[in-house]
Picture (cartoon, rainbow, N blue to C red):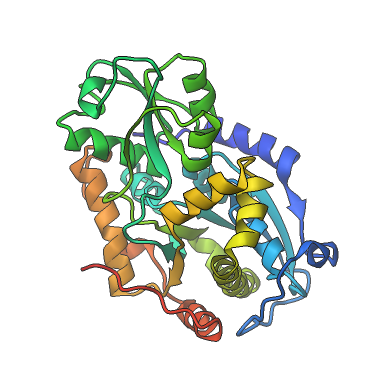
Length: 354
């Protein structure tokens, strides 16, 4: 599958106009609920600025709530995107410096010929469903995944949801490309298309599942999803000493913000699920209890091995067509920052299954 740079870049233009916001001044700290301690602040040349590509406020919200951006020594702008492919294209175009994506987009992009992206931060939650839900239309004759044969199934290509959909179908003896009618949509288009009845089934996120009224559930990401979230950069961005220093500092603050959010579930549920995702507190709590929390890991053999399982799973399901070796697309230069911040926060990442 090929990425769609022209369409994605047009989406990026819209996203920047609509959602990019500077968070480097004192107004950020006024919004904070917490006041985290940053273990190792990095010296960054004056005037340096980072543009952070995120999805569903997954970076800016914990940054704000935790107070991780307090006294940040460089400028930070956040821009929101729909899907990992859009984040990758924003980085490749130079419109963003660092981006947050899930587990599947990097292997899919590499399989499509993209070689200039590297993961410098890795968060994971092995064993979690990831909040990915394959749902069917209410009052339909679809009671199981096997019933999807010949039906229209919607998913965003190049995403974690793509991988989950293909894997769930394969487990039921179906191929995404030949046994169902695949409907490839931008991430933001999946739910409206499903709600309009234009497809028979769709892969949706947790908050979307509740907003849709909890339609019949056919399967979720448990046993497939690794909970990996990557912070990625374009390789040559790391050749700029000022950007590289700011990225290291940003990663440390991202770890602190994530750890704070995990330690303060009530504040996170209200700030993210209620205020941002527009579902009830009880729905948010149920979702958080189901998904669990993730932790930043150093990029080492164990975490890279977990990431490799994602690439191998994508090949196994036919989502990608050739083997992808993940090792050249991860960079552990900021591992000490991750380890120091976890130690300062009293956080020990759970063991990664072998």
